[in-house]
Every structure is written in structure tokens, then in C-alpha cells.
Amino acid sequence: MTWLRYLGLRNTNMKELPSSLGCLKNLEVLDIARNKGIEVPNVIWKLAKLRCLYMSEIKCKVPLRLDTLKNLQTLKYIPLHNWSPEHAAQLTSVYNLSINLGENLDIRELCTSLAKMESLISLCLVGSVERNIRSLDQLKIFHHLTKLKIVERVAKLPSASNFPPNLSYLKLYESYLHEDPMPVLQKLPQLLYLSLGIDSYIGPQMVISRDGFPRLRVLSLNGLNFLKSIQLEKGAMAELNRLEIIGSPLLESLPEELRFMTNLKELKMETTPQLASKLQGVNSHIISNIPSVELIISEWQGPLTELTLTAAFFFIAGIHKED
Image 1 (cartoon, rainbow, N blue to C red):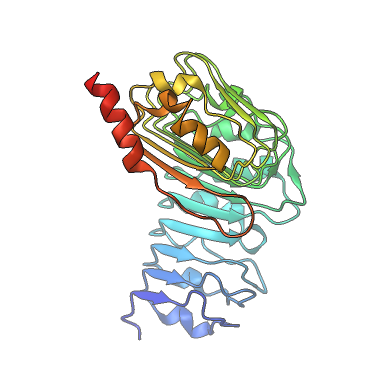
Image 2 (image 1 turned 90 degrees about the vertical axis):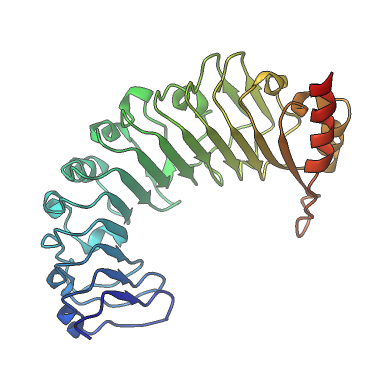
């Protein structure tokens, strides 16, 4: 078995890994994720060729030693209390990191240690909905970071100047933000992809200002259950290619300004029969210039009923273009 390069034990209900794991000197990928409470011996540091390590909800008698893994590139969902962040500077090749934050969190100390990982370009922070991160101002020290995902309650977003300066990809989930995040996020100059996931924002209104999101290509709004209106000012999201709105049952309409967004090629939307009817009738002009439109019509009671109206909207767009 010493020749083994890939060991996949994901979702196998294993309770404990043997210490002999440390003998797999050629192992490059170890996947032990989705084995709740699996006990991991402190031998992973012996796997010098390891490139990818996936885990979640592990148990360790002592924090895992990982500082010897000079070839490690991906480290996913390691619990913060099961490793030593002070060793982060030794993980010189890690570019993709996901951390389960746990309860006792000093976000300032964590960010300071992670900023020493010079190859880090993708970071995911997963926390608890029972606790707020009070401040994310320390994110600005991640100069090389381009992708950021936060699954955690956030009391308030930092100012745009306190986000990583080169951030191009951002996902927020379960942040429970009370204030509209768009006035801050629209100022991120390099942002290309933005996903606001389930309960990331729990307010009723979203406003995107003139020239906001100057480079954004994809906007995904998923599970914003309290959202009633989206306002776009002229010139907002001028480069947007794809818009996705899923799980916003209170949304009353789409903004008129969508009709002027010439780069918008795709719209995917879960909506009520009432709003779908408007978009086919009196408000059809809003989306008639979008080449691909997919509606998922739901009564918001029980399973969703999917109805793709792409063909109908292609027809509308075609007539408009011929005129």
C-alpha cells in the first residue's frame, strides 16, 4: 500500500483512522470528509507528498501537525481547534484553504496568521449561525486573495477598502445582514462573481447605484426570503452577463433598467405565477432583449414546479430584434 497516491474515504462512516496512515509515503490526495467525529492520529505530517487534504468534523487528541507538508496545495474544512495557525507560514504551497471556525474565535489573530500564507488565493470561512463575527476589517491584509467564501453570521460588512484588494469572487451565506450589502460590495473594483446565498441578507430592499459593480459578470441571489425590490440605477452592472434570482418569494418585480443592459445574456429566476405572468405580459419589455430566460414557477407550497419558458422569450426577443 505504500505506493498509494489517492485515498478516498469520504462519507464512509469511519470512526477512526489507523496510525499506519503515516506509512503511505506516496499519498498525494487524502479525502476523509463527511465522516462525523472521525478520530485522526497526528501522523499526517509524515505524508510529505500530500497535495490535497479534505476533512470535516474530525477529532484529534492533539492539534494536527501540518507544517511539514511543503507540497500541500488544498486544505479543506479543517476545524480551527485541530491545527496550529502559527504554522501557517510553513504551508508555502497552499492556495486553497477552508476552515471551520469553531466557537472561540479571534478573527484578528486568525487573519494575521493566514496572511503569512503567500500562495493563498482562495479562502473559505465556515462558522456558526449562533455567533456573530463582529469585524472583518482584517480581510484587507490578504493582498493575493482572489476568492472568498464566508458561511457565518456577520454583524456588519467592512468598508470596500477593507476587503482584499484583488478580490474577484465572493460568496456569502447565512450572514443575516440587516443592512443592504450592495452599497459596499458594488465598490469592489475587481469583483467578477458575486453570490448572496441563503439568508445572507434579510432586508426588503436592494439598491445598486450608478456605475456600481463596474466589472461584475455574474450575480446570483439565492434564498433571500425577505427581498421585495431590486433597484438599479442607470449604468449599474454594465458588464453583467448572467443574473440568477432563486428563492425570493416576496420579490414584486424586476427593475426596468434590465432592458438597457446590453451585455446581459442569461436570466434564471424562480418566481411566483403572478410575476411570471407580468413578465410575459405588461412587463415583457424588461426582459425581451435577454437571449436566454429561464423561469422556475413556484407556488411556494411544497415541491417546486419547474417550467422553462426560454422558447417563449426567445420568440419575444426575436421579434424585438427584427423590428
